[in-house]
Length: 150
Image (tube, rainbow, N blue to C red):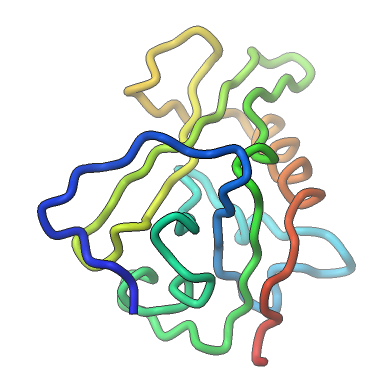
């Protein structure tokens, strides 16, 4: 059962070796390629290991009320989340983690981005080429914790 937020504030400190968990459907990988729906923009959602177990990523409390029991779980370490993406003919985009607890899921965390050098309190949607490169970089660093339907 995921931890509830209660009166706790967000914890902005992430250890490099902390894992982040994300649920995925069977069809999110096709022909060895990560489908865009698996890491949709804006603000990819994860649960952080400091406050959650991997299976919490499938719990309706951390899945917007959805039944995700037959989904899989990926993990990525904080140090493996790309912090900067530079795509051809685009400005550099920086990516960072924000612990964004919700009442039912204190571990809820998002990946935010903005153009390099801009305000980190503001999310800026990156262009399609930056999104594609970011997804490719993340896909190479994910490890499967649980396969779908197992």
